[in-house]
Image (tube, rainbow, N blue to C red; front, side, top):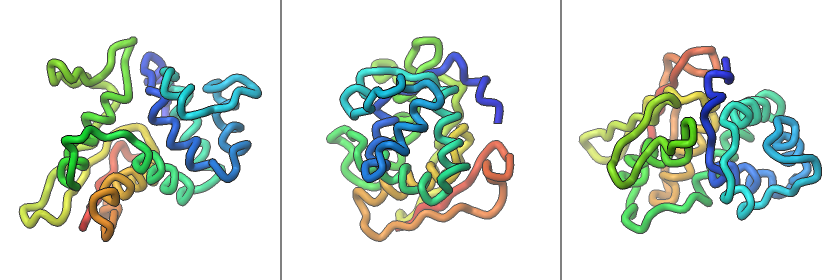
Length: 196
């Protein structure tokens, strides 16, 4: 994947804090990745507080998360995605699985900006383009949703994000990668089925 396409994009450190939490037992491993791609200076300790206060290069962040998948494995990326979802702050009006899953594309765009402009403006409801989407469609029976994801993040990270957010409201949730295109195979998108 050509990460240079995202050189004018940034990601809010709030999203990175889930990765710090996921490496809590082995912080030096997580720190190594943050430092290698210039997200932190050598010896700087990433904390949730200092990450939330900053915006980071999306290009560097994508290199970081994809390298973690390549070197540590897909199951770690899944665990990180779950941790991101577990510690993410959600508004009080999001009170059930449908509202949290239906809001993921908005949250994703809130956490990113392009040339200094946040990609979702809550005041106007306007969403910018350039980083892909989490497109959600709910089944009529109310017990599942399908997602089409054409963002540049690893497939297993997204699977973990869905499981983590859905699990905050429904204990018996499953997330399945639907057969077909997959970003792991070089495709531009993945499809998922979330059931509860």
